[in-house]
Length: 106
Image 1 (cartoon, rainbow, N blue to C red):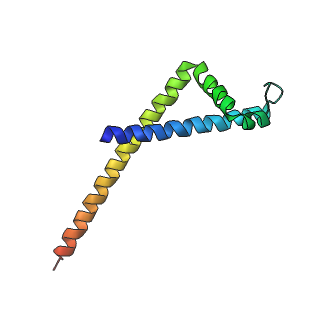
Image 2: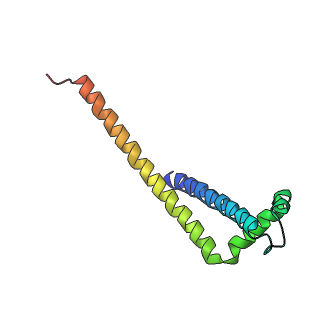
Image 3: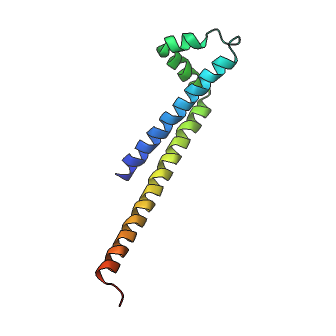
């Protein structure tokens, strides 16, 4: 069960990386309109082709794609680990409060 949750977090982080790359890509198009043969309007009107361009840019360097996926997995496992520690801490604190409430000091 923990693996599924960690992989879910990794998928979320990968989605965030891809979205941030897409925003960065659109920013680059705005800055360098003369370098690219397409404009921002063209990218926004053709989202399928824009996604193909983004995928091509991501896969141009397999090492960078591998690093993005690896970082997503690492962040997913760290998030899962942090949530488990937080959940355990909260449950211990609740248990301690219940025992203090049931057995008050005299």
